[in-house]
Amino acid sequence: MARQIALITLHGMGETVDNYYDTLRGKLFAKLDNTANKVAFQAVNYQNLLQPNEQAVWERMDKGDLRWDDLRRFLLFGFADAAGLETNKEDEGSVYEGAQLDIARKMWAARQEMGGDGPLLVIAQSLGGQVFSCYIYDAQRAAAGQTRHAGIWKDIDSFAARITGSDKALTAAEKSFLRGSTLVGLMTTGCNIPIFVAAHKRLNIRAIDRPNNQFKWLNVYDKHDALGWPLRPLEGGYEDLVEDRQVNVGEGLLDWLKSFTPMSHTAYWEDENVVAALARMIMQGLLHPVTHSVAPVTTPAQPH
Image 1 (tube, one colour):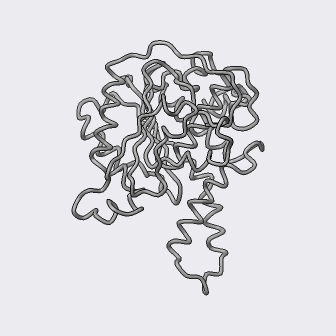
Image 2: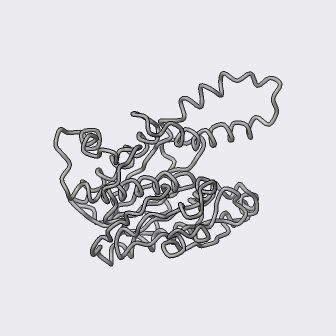
């Protein structure tokens, strides 16, 4: 049976296991009950491009005289992710390119499960929000005729075989889907896009364009999470595109440490309110078909 809606997950920064999505998927599918079999579920894992190198550096460090091993490990693995994605991203085979390629592969696989176009939702944790935002931004600017210098959208046709696993060219419909034309919902949790754009001139900060009339961007953050930020204050389109929603994740008696400390950054996908909000977005996506895409603007700006 063909699926009716696609859900793509992206993890955040730091050490990541292959099945990082298990708790979220389990809670979500339990809440969706019989509707779960309508969901084409795909998980992006760009950490596979980064973690082996980070582990090798960690092992080479002489940590005998160093303190705070756990904190150092978190900082090395976490912030090396962000640095790796932004450094030399124009190079062929860069980590930036590889992350976008994995997103496209998972989107294409989800479309295959649906048997063609269908509504798409994405949930992205932490750094994953930045990664997916850049992917959509690059895709929209390429569609508007602007030359892209990094990522797969500098020449999407040359990546066709690596996306589909075949020698067939991407059709116009497939490329439109990969650009996010049917993206009806994006949920970001613990999003740190402000960290990436803070050094840019205010007038150069710009959000992605609304992919279609049904699109909703829900940005969830906990005020105790130092890595999670609201997005509407950025302006540049964010103020009209994003709904910021403050939550208090990990509210259970045993989760008090996460609930009221920066450790809340790791608790979003376990939180019942976050899972319930995602379930509602899926149900809305099933109820309201995508109409038409909104053409991207052509004003040059910094990616986001």
